[in-house]
Length: 423
Image 1 (spheres, one colour):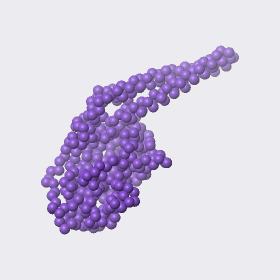
Image 2 (cartoon, rainbow, N blue to C red):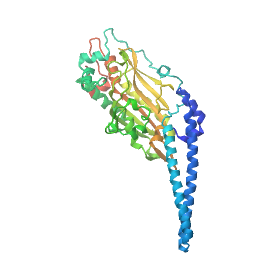
Image 3 (spheres, rainbow, N blue to C red):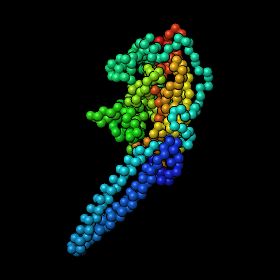
Image 4 (cartoon, rainbow, N blue to C red):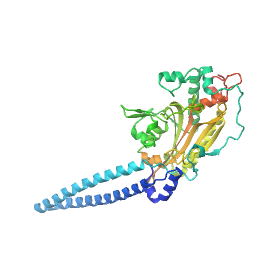
């Protein structure tokens, strides 16, 4: 959530940033500024009435001591009337504050200056290309959904029978591969200094709002109506909320956390090979990294997160590229996002496996996540990244490592976790 002071002081900058997101109606900016001016005027009037009421109360006490009861009773009537006005003003303040928050919740983050213009993923910028020739497979190579049937690794049909479309069931070496990847990712992250977290897999409304999932993404989340809870779309949500309503010290930084969770997303699917198999599912496993940083260090931290994720993909021997998302594709809460895509040699297409983002103060303003800078408190910066999302990683590993005789090689870095070298 943008800060109202930032909007007022940088209105033109905000408008130019939102234009990168292809927005053209900025009436809500004028409205929220006007409401804030009205709120300030109301607060001034409220402060005046409260100060007068306190002063009169002191005078009443003195009059009673002096035996001037009638004069004191007149002032008591005035205090009563003043309290009624104070109550009215407090109600107005509450109403204005709620209206301001409701508008601010609808305004997306201002993209970083380096975010390229564009309307869709087609306009994303290749930030780092794969420097080598892309692998080519034999004519008999199969996509991962066919390899899965050959080796009994996972079943979308059984998942549909048990839950519904988009809920894969892993078995045998497919299940072991999932478990191995989760352990491998967590070990890589903790060795890099991230604290491992095991959060709840459901969150309340305040938690979802704190990281920007509400009100922007409610249609993508699974909602448990009876309990008013949401299934996790990503571990970023509960992990970042650990520091909601906290005031940190400068020596607490950097805060680095990692967590594995299943992720649930209701995103509507389409038909075709590009969403077959594990390319798009409603439930998938993911390991996340989250950082809370001092503002002056957050972009250096973002660079470090990019190198960390790139290092893991190098160890998995997967060809990848990094995209810088354009204004039309960057998420509602993000100021700057990089996507990692791995090359699927069987499908001959790129598959997104990670997004690494800096939200600057957008989440921390919602979370009231602050740090003490001398006598003042300031908002921290929050960042997160997938490290990594398993469904498409599994797809890439199966397809890229298949041999002409139909077997699948396991990357050396993963073999201590799978305890087998070949499927």
